[in-house]
Image (tube, rainbow, N blue to C red; front, side):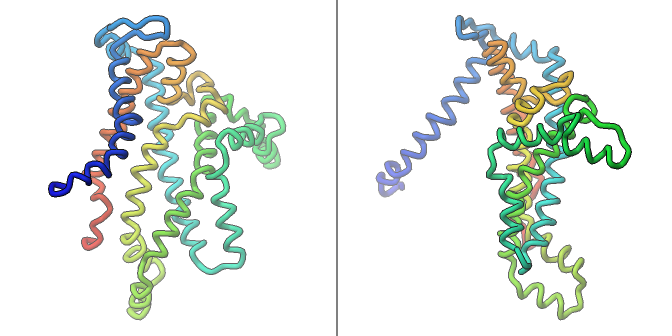
Length: 288
């Protein structure tokens, strides 16, 4: 590029797209966070929105719910995705059917999926209520009790995403050289030793990729919360993104919602930096 300026022309569309749809909205949001914008007026209020966040109990609850949701959803989704991938990488009867069955929820609209699970969690005739009644337990108001609502949404989220994790792990498993397993078998390594000493280290880049992207996506959970519980009961399922939406479009406090969005940006950016710093970037296969 230093010798031929045509290179700058070739990458110009990318940088123009990035500026228009990524950088400009971020800087506009940061500016709005210092105002009291509500569609009717916009006044510069300085750090008022950020100071108010320090005393916003609902925001604190939404942050805790977002962390709880991510901490429980991400490891379970990754573990199930890896387990299913290990099972479905072998040549089995009906392999395509099983792979398609597990992947279909991922390409299903979250709105449609949430409506189905609303019926399944229905407190009087839902399938889960009928199941617990079979074993003699009383029916549960899964989405209407603070103790069970967030867990129900976690179940839905795992069901929706596990197919994607399965597909990525299968691709990672198929990239591992077969001769490594053949050499291990000759040396008498058990199935567990082959998994722990070959499969698991060789999947480290895939695991790191899924962990980073999964953490960001889970921390931004919104659709299922909005459709299934609207943040209730008693804010038991409200998340940071749901709070941003609620402040912006229900209370028309767009300036304060922008400040909450800046907080979310800082949290996600900090966690991503920490992941890259302490996650070994998933590329140090030689050390494995």
